[in-house]
Image (cartoon, rainbow, N blue to C red; front, side, top):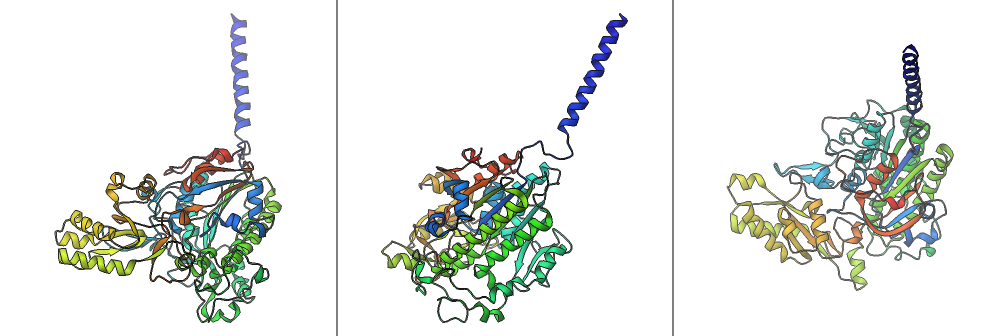
Length: 555
């Protein structure tokens, strides 16, 4: 009996010893046993059409866009799956895997339906500017975004040991990707020429950011002027210089190269964002963040969210067929090659994962299309809004019942409707019939009843995905392909916001740790990036996610 008790006791003690060894082996001080890259770098290029990957491919270096395509995995048919296709929504959707109906960012700004007031997507009156004397530039935070981002989920998964830094010259391009829990988000203040933040993140700028600002890089860049990277007669993928479709810089008599930025400094340092130097400046700060924040320096995965905003400013001004845009992408390619080389050195090739995408694409200029015999037109929204209000006044005897066509949706004056005891349905019906008769309008849809409308299913999905009842208009305006909202038929530059492929076909390329080489023509959505990266990192997908992982891209 004593022998039996002794035997059982020894078994029990050996079990305790074995369990202790197992606990020790699976509870290291670092999470190195979980297969993850040391660093994730998200790169969003504001207003990058998918076809730019190939339109300028022959002139790209081997280290930038070509490297991503040749070493990484490209989803060749990736689309935005909501309307409108604009910056604030695009950045939110990529990082949350969600859509405006859920994450609440329904535009760069929107009409609050209850009050009729306008809300900017990153506005926050409760915080203050850090890094500049501008009171308004830093009153920003992610509070208007209603869900978590993949950057939030990484922080949660590592008990906030992962570091998340977000950088963009546009505030919304930094703040929304950084999520609610970012260690820092930085954006550019054109008034001071500084990279700034808000008290949502910090009380003062880190010393390394202050030192970076002290270098006065914006002035140094602008004093170089902007000329083409290569001889101008080699830009064969673009219209001639000074085409009538191009906008001009203030004070310039033409839109030709060289752009004498050195002579325009008196207009302020915000000018840099309208040149390729704005992209260079953004990636300069990104490299400084890698070095000074120790991103990717240990076994705890970090995240660097970068948005390159200058291509959007340049595209709006000159249009996608301009030499200015071609030169912008050739220069960005060179800057990306430098960034990837820096990551190879500091983090180690194969130790980091990169994805590259866009928040939206862009239309061709309407005048350019018309001159090349392609059906197109401008929906003169301000003029049509006035006519609509006249029609509604004739019926209901109340002025300005339609407040806005913002985000291609009609918002009504709900306070006036309630005060005058009017029927919203009656107003809506008259507005829909009026809009259907306007040139360039393909459909005018009662959004609340979109599912039952006789329009293509893909349009229904995008309209429903883009609708948040508290932050969206009630009638969706869908224009004919190659039509967009503008002020006149011969407007210069280009814009975006519609649901057709010119605005919604975006690049989606993954490269690095955990990613295999290849391409797919399977259709994917912008919402699929967040679950792909979340799966790669073995973390929970964001809490509003509706996307699916691109498993074809994973090793």
